[in-house]
Picture 1 (cartoon, rainbow, N blue to C red):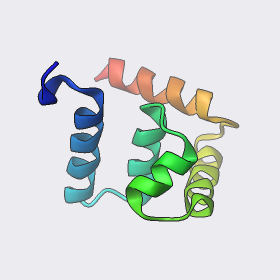
Picture 2 (picture 1 turned 180 degrees about the horizontal axis):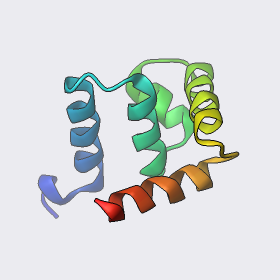
Picture 3 (picture 1 turned 90 degrees about the vertical axis):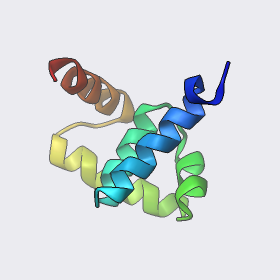
Length: 83
């Protein structure tokens, strides 16, 4: 498998793309969670605390009216299939 086909490269590129477009940190965190990353992995990648990641996820869940990451994953995948 070459670099461009690897999952970590695609997630890294997506994260960088969102950051360059000025996406809020919550959007970047949501994308990494949907990609299957743990809160600790997201925190390490973005150089923030796990508590910061948890706070962003709490606010995302509240805005979307959901309770957990599985629901977030489901909603994002639905949105991707609609575009």
